[in-house]
Length: 118
Length: 178
Image 1 (cartoon, chains in turn red, yellow):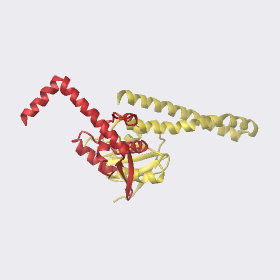
Image 2: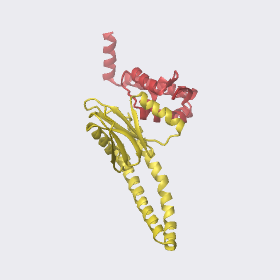
Image 3: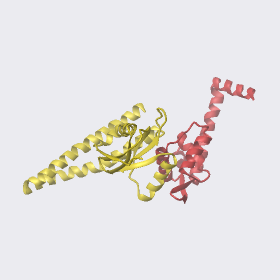
Image 4: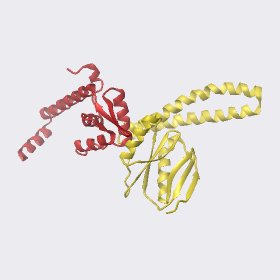
């Protein structure tokens, strides 16, 4: 289902995953840093050197592109290819979760408990 | 407010960037706040109150238009750009009680910095090697002045080689231990 061009970018690192997710709507670098921290519930904190490098790589690979400039800040957005890569990644993660639900009893117990708590 | 400037001279080896960061933080604790690096090896400090700063170095060779947004991103994230020396970018941030903020949040991007320095050295090493036999030939013909140049180039070759070796060692260390 996922073609080869998409496949070669997968799996994404956790940081790249959240950067792409944040760039579903156009943002400048610092907004991506803040957004990634928020949507990852604090599990990802991107430092500026790392984010700058990631932007360069993602732009060179055609997964994001610069859409605007706000003063000295470049505004990036995910591209069509980027969206397909992101969807491919989410599908992989879904398979990972399903595999745990089917094969790992400790996880099965935990998710049942959580359902009961609710 | 005192505006007294203190200049210190010191050599900086490319593979000692972490020592450089620690040295600048130590200076700040003595009230010497880095103001500028007017030329390589010369550090200008402003004499002030002792302060807790964390210094971090990145290595970049950016075009002017990319440098703007690069510096803006660091500044948005709270990092002040305090100087630049041959591709090395000096950043600092105020630190509270023992905090050690980083400009790289993963290993891969930290290794990336050393790889950029390495690429730079590897480009210049062959140039120096190619120049060598020419300089030796010329020294035979033109005498002592060219001999000195040949000697300097020889020294440079050795330094480049040491740099390449040290950087490769640093990268493999990081890959092993993180």
